[in-house]
Length: 209
Image (cartoon, rainbow, N blue to C red; front, side, top):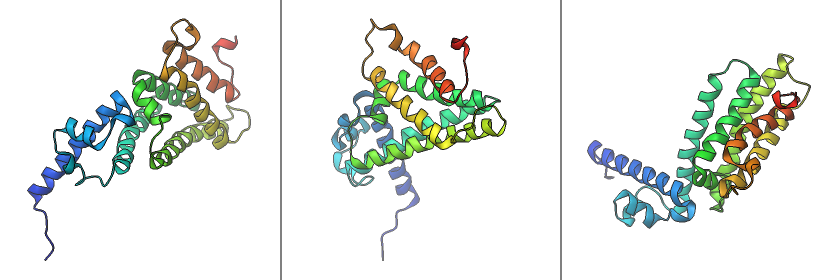
């Protein structure tokens, strides 16, 4: 007869897995993927390295679950920001503003999510991550088009271009910001990205006046 875990045993394993993921999130924010070895995460979680393999078959499996955990939180924050605005224009701006501001508040973590070399399975998850944000933007762009608020364009293509440009623009500030260049300080990056986004959509903003 196959062994069946009792509810108490399963609860302990579930709690341990959650502790492992929380430890991994903390290490990712501090050290990036390079610092998230199975041994390092086990040490942070307060368990034996061998116990890690009860939950994750390899570091690649841990990395994927870790990436999904953090990205789910970021996507939720963007959806919450979008819900606070009434017009498609405001919601598009809210997506870019929220994404960029949160990235700059946690630069090491955002760098790991966006560009740090990692396992190929993480690269695959990054594509899903970008497509998720693209789809959020595309839906709002399509709504603005339907309301006659924007010139004709392909919502998916425009959204993909905005996501790509935003990620690229953040790469430098997330790595290091030269304090002598006020145009690229974190405080200047977010409004500049929002302005760029609105112009890319075919709108004018206050800085065009």
